[in-house]
Image (cartoon, rainbow, N blue to C red; front, side, top):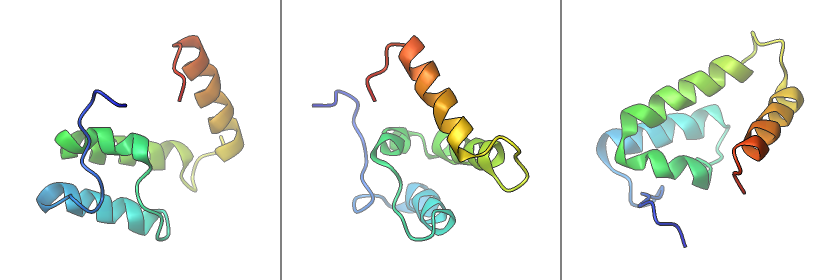
Amino acid sequence: MAWIKDIGFEAASGELREVYDQITRVQRGKRPYPISTIFGLRPEVLANQDRFKRTFLGEASTLGKRRADYIAVAVSGMNGCKF
């Protein structure tokens, strides 16, 4: 069980709901990933994290999703993250 309070898609309102809706539009109808909902207490952090992710993996990026996933897995492993 998570010890960080999260606000799910259904419970979101106001600024957080706007950020969740933006993420849903960008992800072509997919709701925000559960790991993203831990930023729900600080919608501005979630919005900035989403902008960073889109910049990092956006159409102008030469990195590509596969390489970005490899990097994310490697960094998570180095940090001892089990996600």
